[in-house]
Length: 393
Image (tube, rainbow, N blue to C red; front, side):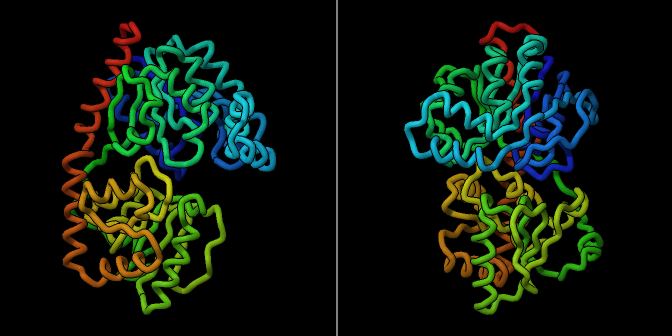
């Protein structure tokens, strides 16, 4: 089939879960299909300022079409419309405007979809909350497949999202919790599947030289991803300092770009964005992965940690993280500061139990998230959408 994958920003140097998910799924679809990435020139998800050059390019097997974002996000205007929409009672026009202000607002991208969506057999859209998906799905019509990456945040409850979901011909979900969250908002007769994300088995011989080159100690707890209040990092810092105040001595290593101040503390080690090889080495040698996010549709980082046999400590108030951890039996979850401290101590002090949890996580990945298993779920779903829409590749 000829497929388009629409994503708000795209690049191997972008630290974002839905962006990474789109990239790796598209790469694996390209083994059997002709795949084009339709995206913007933006790199920063806050301003949407143009960064990459517009036009056509390639990345391995993928064709890329980038479009300008002529109007970067105005944070004051976005806050104002958000206050109105989430207070309840916003009109349909105001809800549409929320998506424009959230961005990325790229008229060129939407014009491309309006003119060329029919050139593709299917058009896959990642992340319902962004303007390219919200306004693009209706343009693709019967060819539209939505990968919602939905989280349990207030946006899921506004009426505009229901209107969007009704217009998609098929759905690709990441976890059972996401399916339950969306419930009856998804048309019952629309083809769908739950795929998560695939992973390759890691090297059997860990290479510690890259970790040593970063000047890290032998033992560390790892947070991997964007350092952001929306990812629960403010709470993570408070809870970790309580762990230190109560005698903890294992440092917290942060690997990812920061969108908030990071406390200056001798046991908090920010590394910023790290290249793929260093990222893998950090995962291989971490004692525990910390996942404080309150909202997730799927934690790929959690799967990556289990892929290396690393146990996890996750925010139990996030249904998706708790569900993933319970299904894998690959770690512990916490709901408050006291539980965080005790669970972190247990995972760091009881090495045998931590190894067992990490091994159970690895077995879970082996069962559910190797690429042949993931693609065996996705391919029939796409074929079913095409058949239902009367599209013959």
